[in-house]
Image 1 (cartoon, helix red, strand yellow):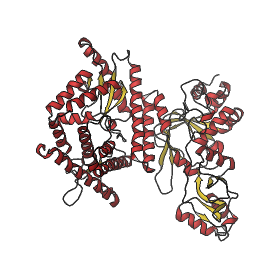
Image 2 (cartoon, helix red, strand yellow):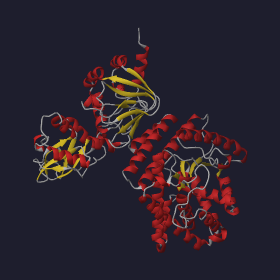
Image 3 (cartoon, helix red, strand yellow):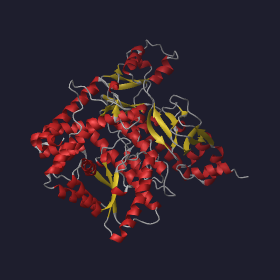
Length: 640
């Protein structure tokens, strides 16, 4: 009798490499031995230092966090696995204990693939063996294919292997502050140095050239067991000769070398041999920490995502990437550009899928506009979605029918964006609102009305719509809208003055005695609103000043101030300070949001150290100075 459960397992596995590379008969034999495991959210599948299992794993349903663990810190997620992803490959290639944790991020069903059953097929099928070896070495879901790299799933029935792509990998992270000792240093002294410096190895050198290496594993196996006394010289227990490489080593090369020689550390020397001065060291742990998520991998995953659920999971991986960038102190401009592109691709993919689900194609050309922080390339955390839609002018009798189509589309898109993690805008400033789903002529008329009326509400709406970026559709429509906006602003000093008054509605957030001004009542009482009192004043100032110069296509606040520094050399120092403060405040808010798992807007000042408070006060001094310039230039005090 046919085992129906095994058949279903085989059907599932056949959709994902390396199983898709196997003969069906072999796959059925493996499926018969697969162990089906159910885990609730937050359950550990395996933990760091745990003895390796007799299985490796594939996610059938749910999601699994892979976490690095430092002895003195909380576990940190470095990657996420979802449907079809394999993990826990270490038992296939190394006898050491696990180096990371695998913990379920949500309720999950996991297939455990028995090693003793699977190994013979991996050995007999070179494609399967090569796939797994490179997947383990490079930490990529599919190491062979540029098109599919990043996930063990392909849209095609077959994978085309691209050998030239095997080693298109990142450069190795090198630790330059390693601990070095001479061969006659006592084991005890070397161990004390390792403990004090919190490292897992020492390099034994003679005349600055590496002659050996000792790891904490060596100390455990050779000294703690009593084989060598702690007073003996370290040279007695060192591993020699040392495997060395030069600075250009890649992650794939390093991991393959470690597996080949059964080592956990590689020395970096000037010429890649033990005959020159040691310049750094690479450990297996450092490689693991460095990998995390790759933006190119995530972009490809977004572009082929076949469900909103998958886009949501990718979004969580983007947050892991963001956290890693911040911890690595990557410049915020670089971070913002990458996260913006990933967010924008997510929005685009969502729109594509929603159009495909409608019965008919769009009745007219259109453009989807992202507003607010996403439009400024400053949306790093999960914040509200602000968007609008402009469509081509159509005959009057077709206008409402056309609008109805785009409202239906926008409703689908905003609903899915909400599922992914972009909250609905409380003010309903979204394309699903008929007020913000207009033809090009209607949008032009709307902006003319806002600029002419110039009431507080109209000014607020103008501010939001001055910060937009096209996420999908016909760029000619948004360009035409921009041209119209700048045309009606030409010579309109009254409007700029009103805009200046709005830019001053949130003064410098420091009190008379240079104390932070916090919320006085409500559920946020005694918390500091960094968006309202820090980010927004600079955003409003940059927008106002760049509009006066009629500069198009620069919506990012920091970039606006950098451009202003070029346009007004006499205020260059102030504008550059504003650009820096804008980046610093956004970065600070992002860190707080990731730490507290919220949007980072409200901060408990008691949690801040002295250094952070000093940095914030410097930013707020810049806010005061730029607002003083606005007051003088626009005589804005008369409008407050």
